[in-house]
Image (cartoon, rainbow, N blue to C red; front, side, top):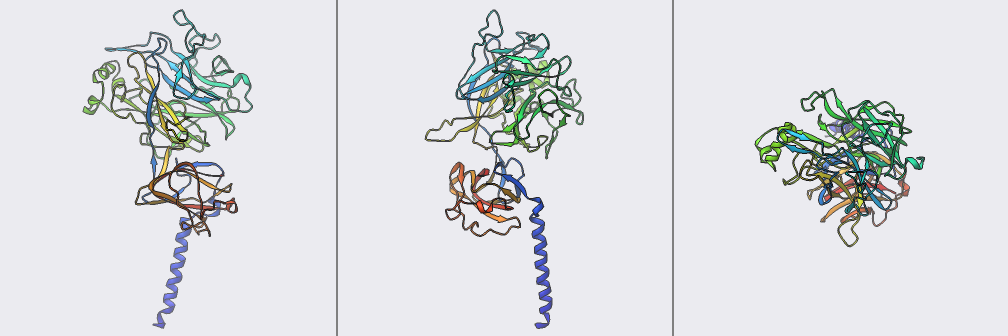
Length: 523
């Protein structure tokens, strides 16, 4: 027996060495430590995720349909009204949109009832909207309407008011006369013009020639102030030459998204075409990108996906077949194309994690749905009060089109989502766990935006970067987290102070049991 001891010792040493090598291949080195400071971090990509074990997965969530909040049935609005811009401005919510009417008959599409306008509405709660009489443009002998931009309005430029994306400029150095901005399309020469306003109602051009020219622009082209990168950024429509398709008429390419930056909103740098982590080429009609206000280092977008499914039996079984056939008599794609909302996110503004599953699908079949022009999500989401009483927290509202090209006019439905509720780390009752990548933080406590069932819960273990458990912060020490809260502090034996770990490379091991984790924040 003793003659075999050295061999056993050697084998044991080899096993230890192998285990060490295996562990070092799993756990990152000091040089790979992320620095999240005190930012709120969401799980919309794999930035923080090192491992998902057990039955833990990333789950894409879907907005909940609420009420119709506005109908575009005024004579100067119409069936093609859309491209909504929505934001909260002090005590009011503002909405801007194109007003366009289309009449469809057999083999004919008539857009001549009135020119395309840009109109304005406002709300005190994001739910009940009014259309103020602004007195700017005379329509059929009266200025009692909410039109703010119209063709021929400016002698120096011939702008198109039908593709608006208006925003309030949060640049602290922005002069008062430019507090509200937009980039609007011009056809000759083709490009985007910069516009400004002091009050969001009365507008003037900032230049007499396009400031951006490399694109197609036949969509809602937008720009905004990026508070993290301290620059303006624009996103607009172009047609990719890399993926030829027969779906785009006179264009030889696929509808795609392009971006550029500027320091002054007038002079724009070289453009970059968006790329995606693992998404196939698809027709993207809009982009709806903007910094997420609770985590502005993250840019999130709600592009519209356009797909033609062909005249199959399922297509014929969708709502309003006869009307679909009338649309198809003008152009087959008007009858069989379907649109829906997607979700995507980026940390560098050009490379996005685009979720390939629908974020806002057409929903249950009913009149005015499952058709071309349905589920165009407005730009962007806003916070609104919950309809639940008893102290329920605010929620996110987003807005989407219905009844496109139908009846007297299209309409807008509100949808809601919990704060940060786009994607979660989810595990069922069978359980699962998330192990983060190594990172450093600033702050003295950790809070979660989470949900659990009454029987489920979440526990957190803090480890060193190499995976070793830090004394006092083990799973056994952690007080189980259960409930449904936007901001719950994590405790270990009823203590939450993490100040001694601030600036130190750590990992989190998070176990979930019938629970969802939406975001984390050190503070």
